[in-house]
Length: 235
Image (cartoon, rainbow, N blue to C red; front, side, top):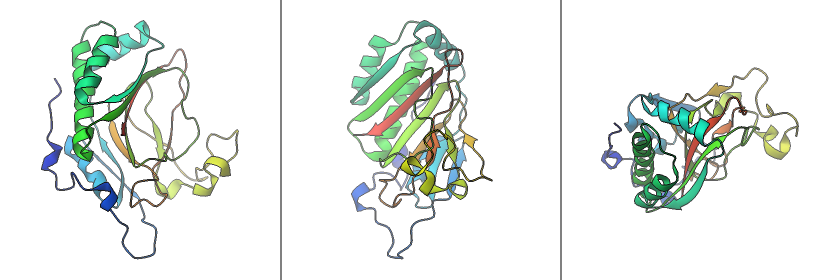
């Protein structure tokens, strides 16, 4: 059963986002590092300037049984809302289909909401949970937000690039419309999060990123190979 974690014990927690400033070096920060760990406390490392993404690597265990059944019983499931952890838990409990280990799955989603809210001192969180049968964002891009939590409960995990493998002026409008690999260096490598991984990705609006957020995209999905994807945003 998922256990609560007190991220408030980290000295990185509860830093005023507006108070973060880039050092007066005149240089853009080199967000080259991605930190991974099997311990949930790694998520607090997102406050370090040289870290662009923090990944909590974990197995889903029995939760996988429910997530697979959800793909079958509710292939068009979509939930998008914002509110307190208690409110989101209540709404999801009403909407999620019955099934073995449903409560375990709901407890896990609520745990992630609580951790995200604790880490950034939020009263409310924006939550999106949906089954995907196609790539939601198939091209490499950077989110225009401070930070987002993502996790895949079933199917392929999100794909991302190390900073050294990115050509940023080829992202977005600078890329080729039909080329989903636009922005990837010709000798670069595409990385993929695993099922169950919980990742915090800095976006372009993180105070010290200066337009160098994590470059990522949605993996391919189909009616035969669906995904169950969760994302959490600051409100």
